Length: 453
Image (cartoon, rainbow, N blue to C red; front, side, top):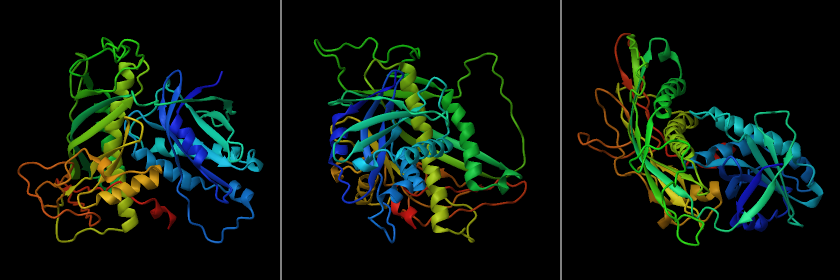
């Protein structure tokens, strides 16, 4: 028996309304949430077209055979940054003519495995053995509108496709629960005389990996209470008479770390000579969503944990891309720099309580963020829909004795003019001297067109 996919009706309408307009195919991503018994698809978004020279519309089969795996994978990476906790890229869809109905399987199979591999490589967490490892491939015939749905086990490269059920439901995510929390980040990453020679990306990720263990091992209070993981998240909450769905609402989550819960636990201290350090400090707004079909506490906590890890890692990853794309050089007249990290912005999806996110730098306009949402998610977004979760008026650069990457503003620091791409990175390499160097992140609204160069 294959898996069952419960799909928001608007997703079916979206797929049916896509026109090939003379193209051989249109492909895109399916976004939603996995559960032990069934998966939920709440959004479909087509992959932005890649501008190519010398296109020949008379040879659609060749174009299908050469489906751009790298381009589709990059779209998945970009979209994954915009997903709150609890949501994943569940798979891909493709729309073709009837004649090409059987010519897409191998190409799409490769893309699914490439997407999963790429997204997993960038995460600070790993899927558990109990979690669903199947990802879906949906084909829609442009003329008959017939849908075929198959899944692949991404843990098994040699697996055969399995048939799956594709069922529509109206208002699928209107009753989903949101979990919100603010986490104070203070990550200090010392650089030994050996590690100082590594790349900034490698050193930062090594430090974040150690910090991720604290988040994984933290205690999570939901509405002020610690609950057993196997308990029903909605246990004790009443439902309206005759109503099988719980009214949508938000749950407050608090995260406690550095708690000594086991008397046998032992900690050690290490003294080492350092040549520098990286500091990330501030407060991040986190948000996760979970379906309302008898969700478990452990599933809700897991979604929150992953959103915390994702939002910090994503902000840092954007820095590495910006340094590479813009070839930003170091400042020679300053030993230490201070740069603000981008702030999180949420936007609702029509007909749903679920909100997607993006990252906004201080001087970046709301129009740019809106355009990036439209480009990545193919959804019409209004400026009034943008919800700035974090203060955007504190972007500044300053020199201090200990440079830090900051997510928010402290009372003893004075803001100056915000910056966007004028990012400076300084590494002080004096053996035996502690010298902090700055990390700054460009807003996540990197145009997908960068990757067409």
